Length: 398
Image (tube, rainbow, N blue to C red; front, side):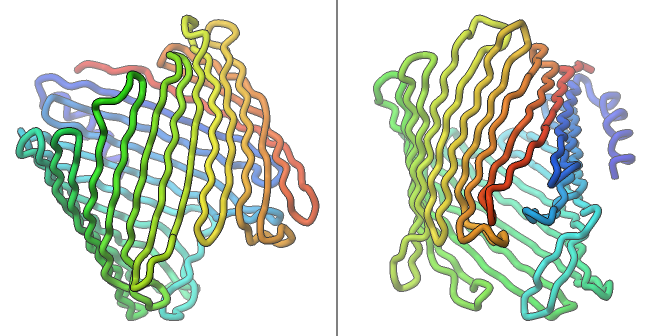
């Protein structure tokens, strides 16, 4: 697929009057005693004119497992092709995603007590249409189709397919937005005689007050979702009410606070809380006149549902010579776990220093050494190294 697409990218400029070509690369790698070869490679290119844009992205990701802290196997190759055409007030967007699982195949527990299958990838074409009738009215419709490559231990293909169709309309006026949308999803596997469908209709209302004090920003939204279908236990899906508010406050030009509160309530004859979360982030910029401004970010999040998770993160980039900066990263978490010997809740902390070099917007190279400490049967400690390279050569006019 890639071999056919790249020549197309080279030929298209000859067919248009004026176009621009962009490309980028992002590489991350590292390793420790538990996961010696994790890494990710992303390559992308974009060819665009006044009327259309073609985007090609290729991603390779590798993550293995270990005996001490099991991880989900996540080694795959993914190709995304996105073609966007602007035809006046109408936008047409066909796209294609092709994913191949590599190495040891991830397991998937099948419904209707059909055993276990191994995931080998999928191909997913899609098409979306959007139109703006005026400055205030917007409609869209989108269809997706998955053909998943799932095989049982005996090698039989499950003929697993999924299809999704959703669409909606939004209206904006005086800082308020009303959205109404519907979604229908169907899963089918002829081999195990399985079929499942579910639907959802959303009514959402959001607002962004305009008459607020300077350097103060607030948004809020509420959504009521009507569900039709059953869950994996055969019970009817509950309707859901979601409310969210976000507050951004710039205390001084170099210091800002961003806070989000979210509450989710389910209703299926009785009202019960499904999830509540609060997240806050403080961002401090300093030495802005330098080639690379320095920054310190402190964030924390707490969420409660049937489980409770806590997370706190500290990140800093302190520039000390031209594009060279000192990095410091620290993260603490507390989450439920199924790791043997860790109890019901596992706590761990990761911290370490690093270096980064930036060359304007063209190149970014970084490396960080981290120590992880986690509470299992006893406190386990290990070191790891992570490195990365981001490259953006700029835009080329054709």
